[in-house]
Image (cartoon, rainbow, N blue to C red; front, side):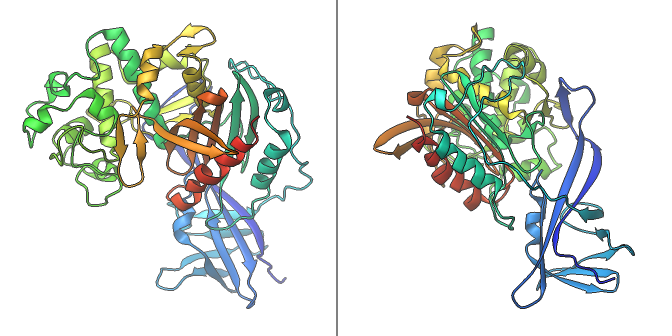
Length: 470
């Protein structure tokens, strides 16, 4: 039998329950199941070329395109200056096992089923799911169905490639109704998605609610007067003592912390991988100062996470409980999970990594449009929302104008100038609020670590959507 490996292969591994996650509204604890797609094609020179895609973390991206070498039942994926990925082909040639496709352990690939006969997108009313979202058609919301159909069909028909867009959901709500709810690449409306740093915007909403509940602090409160349990602070000076809650929310605290600088002492990856200080709140508070608070802003996840220490202390409530009571329950959330820091804090990490249903995360955008209300319940003070979406800093190195946990952007489309608030996260997790249009948009994707790819969602895809709005 001649083995013809060309085509798509699929494998999956079950790593058991998600580590350090607390889940809500699930019948059984979700497992960390990683899928891997292997695409093999024959190049013009006759060689077999392969690449890997992982829809959960894009873990296969580091592997790159490789040449497939087959010798009997042995297979190797080779790339100059890289260790080969080795594996075997089963005697019946129905299974291809690879030992290192970008994630720990071996993956057994079988032929991926071909999806054929998928009808082109047509405007329709999204399914009602008893989650509080009323639904309607695009046309009824004055959004051009044909223009959106072109977008949806283009996503469906994207040719697999190592750096191709890997969009997993696209949702639009206008005038308080969900009018588009589409999923791609194996995702569905009932599968929670890692929203990464888009969760930072949720953290500042929690701060606003905590200020109203506790009446114990304000944006101008110095954090040194709140987090006294962590004193004395290393590298202490007058600048550090002057840091306020506002500085943390606008990433302008002045700590030596820049997630865009691999050598920064406060780099998120450094904080999470070091073991000298397991308490990440104390790690942040002990960082050296780089500049006076409020004078500059750098993208610093540790500063946003530190807000969690303030919320939990002033409300005297664990963060997971506080979020569930004040937001998830009244906003009719379905399944969701919150990522926990390790001991000694064992609290929710407030700078990203939580899992939410896209339909639920979109509700935060609607909350802003509804002056803090969801289905008639006042959850946030509208004055706080106004303040959160005002400019408080300019985040350097491409971050742009920043409010309290919200990126502030302006689009010019069809002669219209449209302002937007954006909750954004690595890989293409983007939730936009367009007050002038009374509209919110949600995108999830798996282009992690590929900013040139998912950055195009902001510069090209979003303007396409806006052009369809009347």
